[in-house]
Length: 199
Image 1 (cartoon, rainbow, N blue to C red):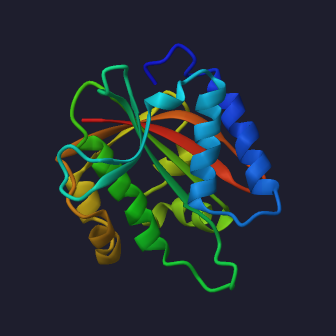
Image 2 (image 1 turned 90 degrees about the vertical axis):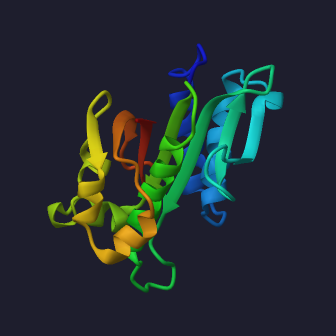
């Protein structure tokens, strides 16, 4: 994350996620985002350098979950967080749409200009993990990439998926390189992935 303590905050993030995901409170994307915020704070990132719901510089009306800025207010890191879990009511999730919404977040990161770090934190439980690991859905890389491994997503890759998925993704850049940075499995019944996004 363009910060000297980037790798040191990973164990803290996993500890924080285990606390909130195993705890009695309602599970939400905001809770996952806060766990990430706490891990950065504990690693020494100054509170004044956080920008939440940051206006996207090139995508009209779009906002980025979290942006870190330097002392001059210039972005150094952009982060999107996505959290998926089984429906408490037992109803089936709209899994192609949810998967497409995660890929949409990657496209939004790819469109963020400048030499910044673009990260996506993805946390999910068994239901979406089983969908993503099914080869028929063409998204096994989300769960199977190991740290340091990359994949390239092109407009052709997106076009091969279902219409529901494509609609959720929206516009896709010509090619985006996705690098897995971190993985953790079975964290209070959840799977955690951190990806870096580059064009």
